Length: 216
Image (cartoon, rainbow, N blue to C red; front, side, top):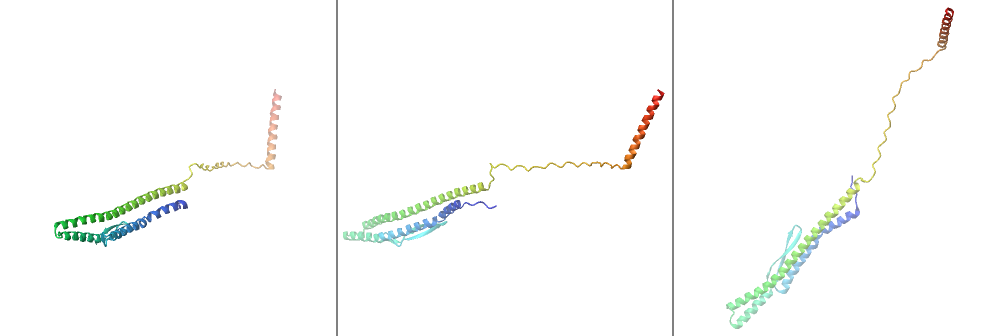
């Protein structure tokens, strides 16, 4: 037997399923945009030349990391300025120049790392938000489907409060037929014979009575 259908409840379930199915198409582009924007920022600000986002597919969830390119123009400018300063002082080939260049590089690396770390944190935040939405929709779907199944069961189950149908009346068994003994029909001859017997009997009674009186 086909189960009853509620168009409203089914529409609600379909809507939740659709929102669950579209989560990757919402969050994957956000992470991609974040990665490419970060790569562009590193290039524009002079920290990197040619940083490239690389995608990692994790069961339909795509995350991105940056593959560094060459040092950007800030590094070149810092080295050039340091060299010029030490050259003017006559310490171009000294350890002081090497030390100052290393200090400049550490400062630039720290700023570059901060930008990349910010992107990574935002990638993680988007992934966690997607996972939270996914769990929420799945929980709501399980609840809605359970309620729908309960509703369907209630429509097909018998009403416990309905009175029971009366039992069918049983007709009494027919009485056993009795066989009546047919009475023999009397003929006119039988009638006359009976009358003669009765008259003879009366005559004998009279004769006996008279004889008794005679001898008494």
